[in-house]
Image 1 (cartoon, one colour):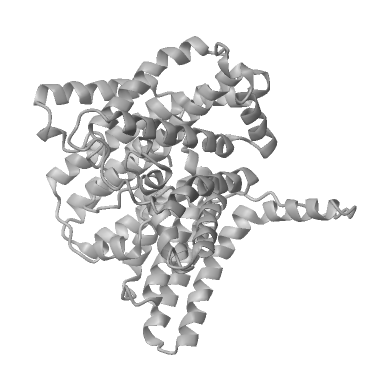
Image 2 (cartoon, rainbow, N blue to C red):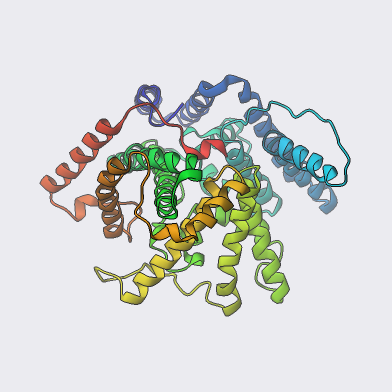
Length: 482
């Protein structure tokens, strides 16, 4: 079920009314409703994969109970590894089986050995990369004794399958979200209105910005062999805004929807394209994933505590694993490695935490230095996104080489060029809204304190009209593929 679908527009009010009016004040019933609704939400895509999420839930719930009763270090570690191997086993099979098989065959063919092994037609379950990491955070934190294992199976099931963030995050920590299922929830009108604002802004980012940028990006990337370097740069920029509008739009809708039910999810994006260096970008982009890797991979590996080699090794590991998490293709691995290369100079000079404040704080505009830093960081990001978007390494390198040629200075010419250029002013308005609100949780956050009522209503109705005007065929979110 897509957030930008008629199905969800019917589903959400029904669950909301049952939750607050039929089961009001009944905590266990509300949790059961969330769990059931989440399974309906997920099963709407393909009911067969409900067994996977249920099995993952049962495994980690059981492991948590076993860890509670066990004090022997060796047995505790064994239980932890059972959880990790089960979750990563499912993820590895569905997501990476054919990737490893194809590369295994290719490796042997280099030595003149032909191996005939049939690949499997495996359907990637939506959201598996997200909920497996979420359940693993529970088991790891219970193992570390940072969280008491739950006795409430219904609450735990609701935590694992919570439909607002089930299929594309944010990847919630058990320490943050699970305890919220234990507490009685009271309807908060202010919180709900703020949630609706965030849903509205998320839909605008998805339906208006991302889906339209996708149209032009797809045209350019799919026809890249016949286009100039200048046209390919424009296509890469369109994809840069597509993936941001699409993914952060999903996160906004998820966080806003959770607020309607009295839950607070972690912030997943913090205006990343206003970053002054790559380190700041990664503190602001897909925060739930980058902090997950930091806490459960980077720090256990030694983080930045060791010598130079340890720092470099750990940096490349976390970025390459992050790239591989995104997809079973060498393009994602190279995308991760490229970001590690971007990050390395900052780490070696000790400047990776030099931009912790909001850019142009207490000022309307950035300084010239900040502007150049933002522009250069954005440019590096655009180059990296080419590998993320390309179908293969050959495709990506072809685009890079063409951009590096003299055709970069030609006049852009691609199908639907004029329509694309008419859309650019809307993207600029979008950037302006984000810039004005760069200190806030999201662009429309706390709007009642900043703008007068008539102005607010003009903004709201304009966004609604834009969403309705651009709404056409339902477009799947990009991260459903991951």
